[in-house]
Amino acid sequence: MPVRKWMLTRRVLGQAGAATALAAVVGRPARADRPYRIGALNPITGAGSTYGSGMQKTILFALEEVKRAGGVDGRPIEVYAEDTQTSPDAAVLAARKLIDANKVDAIIGTWSSSVSLAVLPITNEANCLLLHTSSAPALSTPAQNPKHLAWRFQAASHQIGDAYAAIAAHEKASRAAAMAFNNDVQIASVGFFRSAWEKAGGKLPNPVVYEPNRTSYAAELQQALSEKPDFLVVSGYVPDTSIILREAYEAGNTAKIVIPGWAMGPATVKALGAEVLEGLIVVDAVPDAGSAAFKTFDAAYRAATGNPGSSNIYAAMCYDMVAVLTLAMQKAGPSADNAAIAQVIPEVANPPGQAVSSFAEGRKLLQAGQKINYEGASGPIDFDERGDVTPVFGVSVFHDGKLEQRYLLK
Image 1 (cartoon, rainbow, N blue to C red):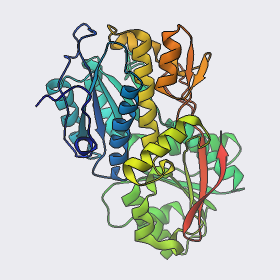
Image 2: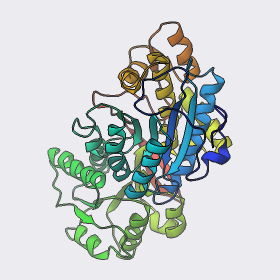
Image 3: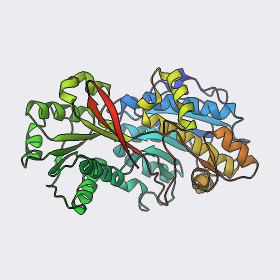
Image 4: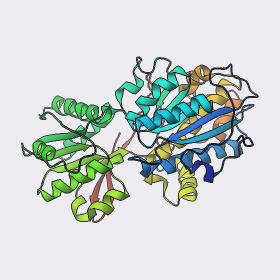
């Protein structure tokens, strides 16, 4: 049922599959009197559920900030929410509903590369923007993103692989090994790790690729440890990584293990305990905790969820998605279509321009005809020619029952 413009509630967005408001038909000429529809497509359930609810709540309060600042001149915004279930099949059904039934103009906040890769052909066909938090290289290639309507707010696989290699060098590793969950992003990440590590003079056996939904990975782990590495990358997700970490501990492994941040959550600590996790290295894109945008995001995130903003980098990315999208809409004008909005995204996010940390700041300067450079909660948000951002990585070590950030990779 249609609801009044901007009547967005935490109750609605907090429920998987709930939706608010009705509006535009994708593909129609844009009109200032037709609301712009946003689909919040996030992992409320499944492997990404640690982050998904906070991502949707962030989209809600970020849009409320836009409203309080006066909104995009002449263009009301409405939002729908759906759950990807962290499943490509479920995500495709949800994306079809958002585009075909709800007529959204943009989908934001898809998590996991398999989900974003499954959704991208649908958004391309509908001339719908896709702002995502996924790492697979294919997401920004001309073949997969020919209209340049998809924008990556997360580290790409080659950046993650380079980070693994930088950590190995920092840890003075001499013999490295790798295990990867069998999907595009994890295999690509360890592949780029291998390339970077060998370019620096190291050697790496063929990474061990393992399948999901196993009760044990002992055989794969034994294969990875067969050449007695002192450094092991395990590139997977929470369920499989938890099993591997326990089995490595039980096998008496002495190699330093590094995992991506998305494979570490409260469930991991609860399931494994401090002794099993002691010394574990975790790498993830981190927000700029000192930035004005992060401070605003952090306060709102704490109010919405009861947790610090630093606990959900993907929520910070969603906050920046809303800011970048609405600033681009502001610059492109109330009658702009998605092609015109996409074209000006780098103009509001990249230098040169006056640095701004909010939609309110940017709107004021854009109305005055000035150039802006949005500096976000999740990082600087500077896009390259492929539509990818360059993140800052934080490297943390699990010690005495908690993660301690040790250093940054820029």
